[in-house]
Image (tube, rainbow, N blue to C red):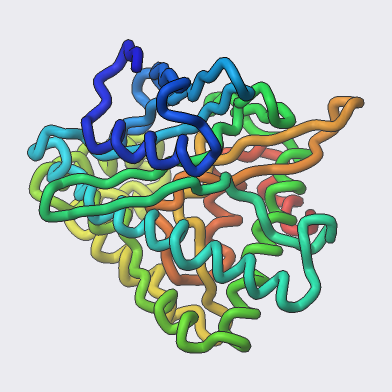
Length: 317
């Protein structure tokens, strides 16, 4: 094995399990590692690309996502809580969605099929040891159709947003189908609270909120728009508890469904046809998945990432 990054032993051990499952013989296998994301991305988890190399079969690359080894860093952002949530989605929820669709005659060839997420090769979590791991399909692997991560600083146009909204619609449909056909599984989804309001309301992260609220309030002239200025300042000490209460699924019944929970530019990738038109989208980073109003994912993306023109008109896309 060769490495330019630090890969914990438990990650290396489980990569060997995946390699064997994919038909790689240990005596003919070499595994190379490299950073799997840009510097500054993945502050809650570390992302490493692993490349399985063999002289007797094509190279396979996978993405490994695991928490920081440093305990204080894990605790600062509740990393293990977030990994437990994402593993639950990959191990139980997405497979249930797939099974349900196949049972009702909907497969990948059907335009109504929801499969807009990377394949999960392996999932592991031991919270007591501070260990967790997801081994996922590499969306940038040369052997698969190319996908593109958009620039987070460039507003997303209608063509991209339309494809994403359609995928979210299929995703929501799976939730409602699960509610009807597998109520016991759906009940587990109902327990998925909003973790963003938990992560950002800890002793370590709570001091960031007043500063950000003051910055937002400064966008309004205190003399001309005093109410907006005051409302933002009032959020300084109660923003995240109020947020958690407002996005509870109970407030959206009977229409609440599973949300991605962190649907923005850095957590989606797009593919294109031969003419450069947006063809498909893949959603990843499911650690903030929650039960709530379906509209939350839509509004987050449109208002945070979409072009300004989408805001008054985008509801018809």
